[in-house]
Image 1 (cartoon, rainbow, N blue to C red):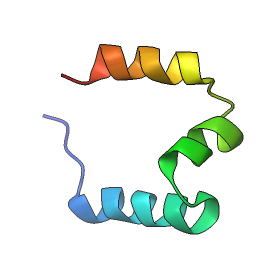
Image 2: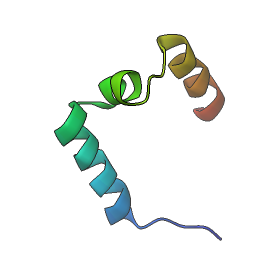
Image 3: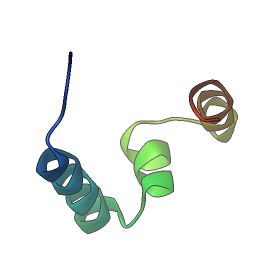
Length: 47
């Protein structure tokens, strides 16, 4: 099985918060993801 340590995920969240403020800003400005693309990801990946 593939696993991830919780501390790695928390470190990622902390870095995004420090550098971008929040994930919406990170997705839009950091990765260039449009609102439409974000909604498509949300629809496909979240229940």
